[in-house]
Image 1: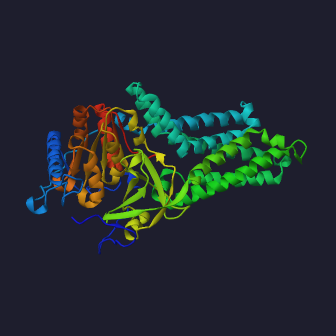
Image 2: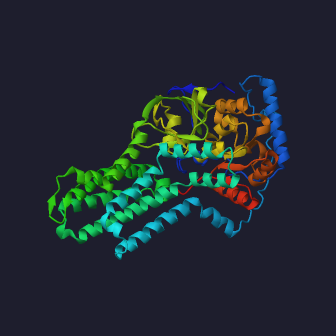
Image 3: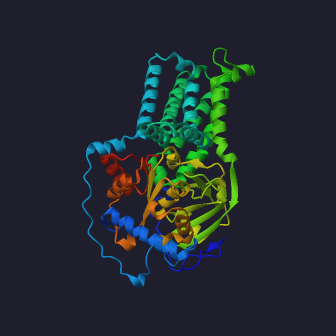
Length: 520
């Protein structure tokens, strides 16, 4: 195999290469899986381990250093023929109760509680049984929107992970760690619930203002309507179907119209609190405005929105193109495990999140694996950039909570290795299972070297579906590794079908697993 090619435009993809853009552009959910059409093969886990150990030992003995031979993951093609494809075993029948438990997860529980709680408040306000709402409707609106933004703020979430990891890992029982991890993973339910509830309260407020329009100033009514329209469009644009299928549309409306909504909210708060409806005059006393709850909610809301953008930087990047399907991005700075970063070619538009691979804070570099899914990732391969825009404040994925547990398993498919690898590199107590097709050829020597340099053979299974004639029975594999490795938890990064199958199998078998979210 040729040496790795790092480029700034000089390396072009092979001639005739074609790219699929049918899937959404989110490699960190493991959507790219070029073994999807292959049958599932069930083989005893002992054979998996023995075979993989043999491969790694041959590689280690022959290489001595970290430079791999022509193919460290499989033997040369002329020395063996690919195994015949075997028929796929029937899919497991999963009870409706199992499926319901996974559907009604903590995300939906948070969302349901928040929206119902606010709905009760709106009903009580409408029938005159909620005096606080009559005098502080604006505070309720902004309180909900503030909480929605807080639950998506990178700095706040990093703080939550920090206190959870260092506060629980040494003494807390497993049931408490599972509960806290689930809460950390699903706080998006609070975000969605509060955003929708804030929009509902805002509609109620403007209806109340229009109802008494005879004593309201026209500017208050106008800014209230503008704020309503902006917030409602921003909320609707974030619905999962729109966000997953029309990413750029989501960004334009959720971000820019959301910013317009914040600006309109400021005008609405100031005009609404300085106009005295009893006297029909504008109050000039600044204390009357400063003392209002609405103003301070608006202040904190604005600060939370600005914090991530203050850390925005244009940084140099090196691009390796091991195959037409993947771009490996190399950045300066070492990173903790379990973090994700957002990148864009522009300072404002089209940000995409990918897992960060690093050997640790002191390593000096970190990597992103970008599988070709849509226009953005395709362009990384066809037109490698010299620089990219990124937020220096990285955000924590659920994998960051792995530091809370003593031993665990990270299982991933395809480009999901980007979100999983750092955990297994930086911790000797985590087992890596990576399922993919022709991994060394597809992902190149950089990722291969990181794996073999940092993870011993007894702590990993690299399942090459092309070599083995299909994918493994992943649930059976997880069960056997769970017991042999003494794992406490499993983190899954896969496409939707693989994620659902593994989550269902783990729940049925009593294995504690956290999979990819598809609700946000």
